[in-house]
Length: 249
Figure 1: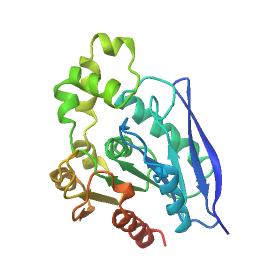
Figure 2 (figure 1 turned 90 degrees about the vertical axis):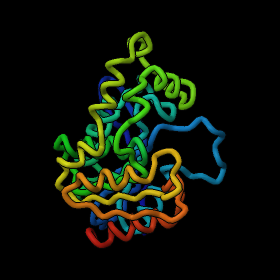
Figure 3 (figure 1 turned 180 degrees about the vertical axis):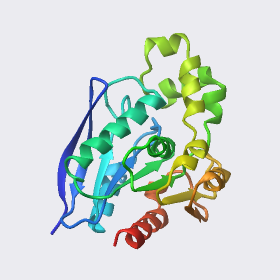
Figure 4 (figure 1 turned 45 degrees about the horizontal axis):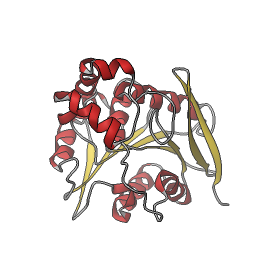
């Protein structure tokens, strides 16, 4: 039987965020997919985005959801990394009481979504596995130069920031220092998969080893000639599916 697609609605901080779920009968676990900071580059018509990745995961036998976090992909609210942490925490709660009820929950985050996933898990969210795709170990530019980060978010990523952050981004920048994957991963006690491309020019490849060095236990895969957008690399997707199959057959 084919997976059933449903709408996902997540209420958090007086916002309602959207996403979707593919529910697979008899799935051994549910996987929540998280995007990173979006690009304003013209979209590739052949790219199915996170719904397409969720469909692949569901067709492999798992239930899979994707969440559009605040200020991204047409969602309401102002962007902040702490806001994204709250969004994901709320999404896990929603899924555990609905489409993922009774299932182990794995959170798979790409780039910034990976750092958020590690932070959510470190704070005690009920997560049973963690997948980090091209995740940054730390936020070098945002944390050290919040004014430049404001420009990147508003102009390059097209996300809204609150008037308070625009007036003084120092506290906003501090959040990026606090939400650090290489720090938060040390508090994570569930299975961790780290996948990175050795030709990633957005998040340097050594960030994968830095996160792994602080993890209690992590499986690391470096993709030869792999770039930053690993969700579109069939080799990375197969590594994720193989890892899930070994742990939740």
